Amino acid sequence: MVVDIPLLFETGGWRRVDSIVVVSAPAWVQRRRVLARPGASLGRLKQIRRLQWRDAAKRARADWVVPTARPKRDTAAAIRRIAACEAAAARR
Picture 1 (cartoon, rainbow, N blue to C red):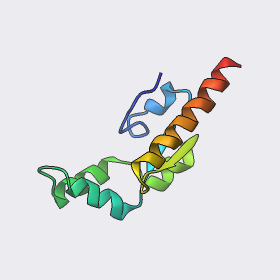
Picture 2: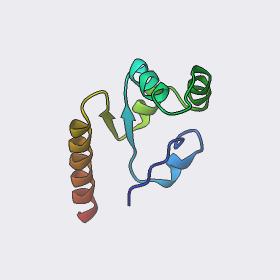
Picture 3: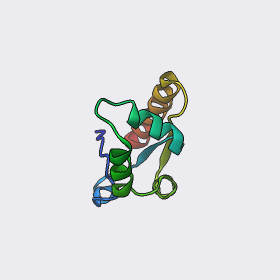
């Protein structure tokens, strides 16, 4: 099963999963994406960042890191590769 938990580390959810995949993008890409959302603001971006662990800390604890500053097809391909590896490991 795959679950999407935005605050996985911050809420202790990492203790309840078998593997961790962190999607990661540079801060400038994150900023651009957040500010492109309807109703977004710099204040909201700061609030989001205050709630989250730093990207480097999440990457350090992850089993897999998917860079998302690339085209969506690259991200999707990376997710498929990870899912295949995890499925193969589960069959062992």
